[in-house]
Image (cartoon, rainbow, N blue to C red; front, side, top):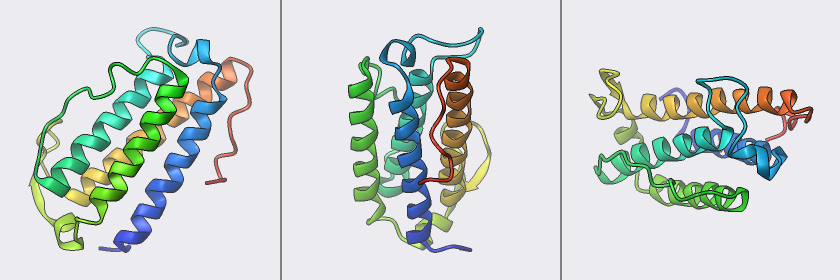
Length: 155
């Protein structure tokens, strides 16, 4: 690995803190209902996707339990979404301790998205890039709503 397991977790956690601040910037009534055009989704829907991908990959890598399901479909308020983010971050930290650098380097066929052979660290990098991508969409939504997004460089 080019970076240590601990450094990668620092990056994941810094990004999640910024994502949480992005959720906090949304007004309650816009978080679950606003999207500028079809087929774009509300930011809360994108956040639920981020959390579902994280749970599926982390559980698969840490426990060899490869199942992708919508674990956050019942989340319907800003407070619940923020709690879900904190809970998922805690679950990730707990599972992270069981994952070795050797396990992160293991290759296997993508179980969910048809991406072919990938290492587990590549899977987690995809999840991180997915979060960053959707957070960028959230920034655009906030600007369209006349709201200044959080400073991206503060993690």
